[in-house]
Image 1: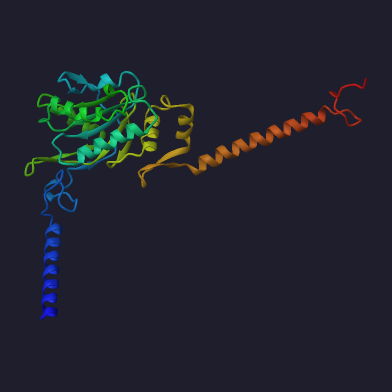
Image 2: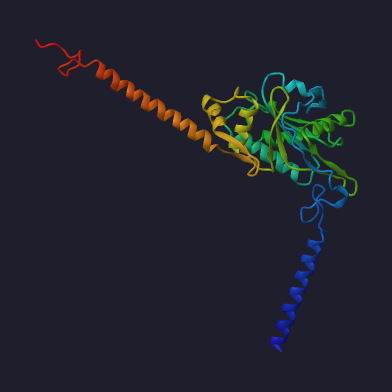
Length: 296
């Protein structure tokens, strides 16, 4: 009887787990950012979400947004000082992904030794016209409490409202960021990524995901600025690294390092040869250098 009861309980647990797994597999879990349980977009949004890289494309800078105080501002206002810009697309009622993207940006800012405000700026622009400047300001206050981000005047959280809704769509189109509003869930389906712009508003690099390695973030900004930010060593590093599309990160260029190493060895050997050649030239026929002091 005990054995039969144990078998019955085991079968019941197995059936319950199987049923639960089937529910998850069928995607009946609550959607997240327009995605279903397994992370796949529903068919109604297929083809409307993703990133089509537009490297080298110039973004229109006359786009108008609302800053955290509710004042209209144009994109040109944070590019005219010659610093590169990192852009993230978010919205503040997002159930999870957008806060993770912003946290990832803040972590990258804190990790890099480039100075926010002095070397570059960050812009998180809302794709949801229902977001208000006060809501963006509340989100910014969260990052102000960290105390490790530097100049928060260069950490912008802009919204659009209904008046400037077309601005975020034009900006997204210019950089190839495709997002879609799901009327069934009231949420936006979108990807997690950072888009880096040069001071001339050209798209220079995409950093994907929600965690941005400090090295990749820094090298991307140095690349976007064409070497005008960072130290001389940073500008040297960008010649030794290249962006690996498969790994989606910067990796060492072995060929470049080999060339640099070969050039340094040639300089070293050339210097040694020159030293010994001059030494031989200065020798007298009796084998002593001309510079030898005369005997008293």
